[in-house]
Amino acid sequence: MAQYSIRLPNRFDFHYHKTFNQEIEKLLQSEKVDLIELDFSQVQYLDSSALGMLVLLSKKNEKRHQAKLVIRGAHGSALDILEMANMAKLYAFY
Image 1 (cartoon, rainbow, N blue to C red):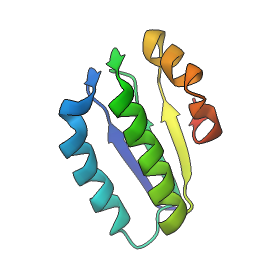
Image 2: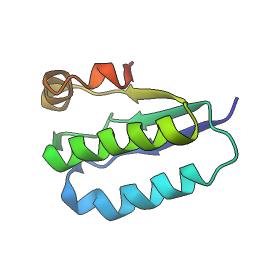
Image 3: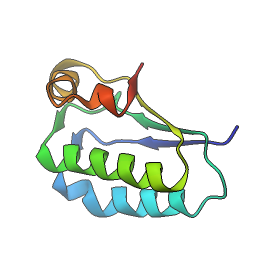
Image 4: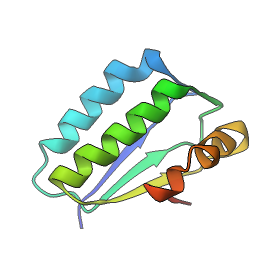
């Protein structure tokens, strides 16, 4: 089972967009990925562009790999925002 993990920064916002997209492109070029994990353990802040990046990853994954999508370690206001945005429909939370 091929796994891919992305550790997100303290501020997951538009400034991380380029780096996140580079990670996603590297992921999409992989042969086969069964699990994509986003490590939210350090995230204290996220904005609407971060939510957009999460939706985009979900859509690209659906077309390419159909891997299980996981958000691990989300807490505090970041977890509250993810829950309000219904990200549990796209990602499993651990």
